[in-house]
Figure 1 (cartoon, rainbow over the protein chains, first blue to last red):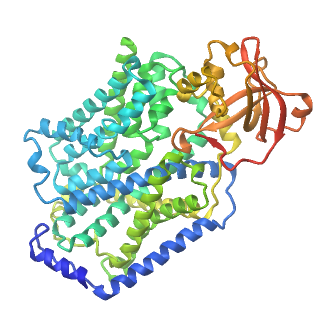
Figure 2 (tube, each protein chain N blue to C red; figure 1 turned 180 degrees about the vertical axis):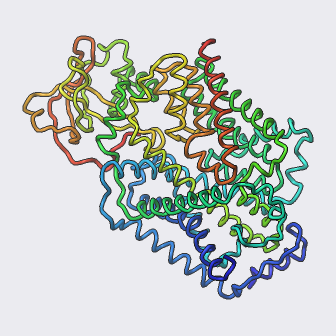
Length: 351
Length: 271
């Protein structure tokens, strides 16, 4: 009861955006605790089933793929929850204009600032997608959100620390990774800002959710829940499918096939890019993984691995597909891969 | 499409694919933590974060029961045709066949994601198979912890060393003599010795993990054992090896005093 009272107060105080529709509220206030109680019982039952895990194990290969997929999911789920939380904060709780006031006017300036936003919002790449969707719903342009999405997995404090731990300043790998990530994000942002029809870059489904978001005027608690439901629906199936693909590919393609290509300056770059797209390791730790190849692979190929992996691996592509059209993803892959080849080649020549 | 039944079904599908699957994953995470098996998947240092966020998610999922189906706004087709985007047919120019093919792919993805989540909840946790460990053995030691291990080893503090640490030391030590004579007790599983002449009668192998299981890498040290000990060892058998490090022609290996077959330990990976 008190909850609906505060909701009314907020509405009366004019919090929230334009009020065109009013959400119907079929659930009587008195039923809310009952429903939440039922929800808690259902969740407890789910945990109990997971503890019991009544089925037998799968055949070895399928089980390996499932184990690999689950490890990615267990690792990335907390970041997705964090990202959905931040997306709710940005969309529902930060007052209109609070962020926009601090942004530069020019497109270049705005994109440069957004590509450094990852320094403040250290969510790794899985959490960035819901956060970026929150930015777009809030009114940031598609190209600005893309800039953030591409920069944040690389230009962020955790990644800088782990990359430094792994490589120090050897061969300019850390510097090339950071500057490369910043540059490719702004390049992509600039290219897509020149697109004549930015709305055509995102999926119909996502554009529809932007429009509904504007007209919702329910209480903030309820809007937060609704936003969580929508974001989870968009991100979770894609994350699961992407993780399973990463797991299955790892079980099916022997690692030697990729590694046999060895230390050839050009081929090694191609091989490491392929490896990065397949293994889908979180950008927070991919440098440790890459380090174990550093003895046999050229430094340029390591940089290429560290640039491509966080941006366009199979898991990330599945996540991005929730929001962007296939054509945009194809463009992203081409630009990022070509850019990584260029940076990797330059590092190989200089190192 | 716009009948009440259809919209309830769509609302339910959306809840299942979003909140439902997320809750399944969170429940699996918590179940792993409760049975102390979270280390089979991720590094101990991220356990607290993973479990906290899983609890947050389950509480949020329970709260979402109070949100009526469809109250989050119906974003599927066939609703609210007065929105601006539907008034611009040119933009949705994809042919009908392509769009329905897209819908099939989306539906298949949803079914696959649901099936995988069901398997995750219903199938007991497992460790990676030995075959996978072998296919990941690329011959080079996992060097990511090399720097620490080698400097520690130089100070003689090797009591806490596992297979991964020793593998890096064996691969990078510049003066093998410094380590010869060290007593070791190591747990791992048996894999065939490296190429003939590579040293040892078999290799003691362990998967080493930096962050989560998908980055698992095989670390191996060569072991020389008495023939009586060797006879009962199949590839994949977990063993506890007690022995001394010896320098065999400039190449370090472990000379086993005893090789004891054991069950797979509860912490099969090294972190």
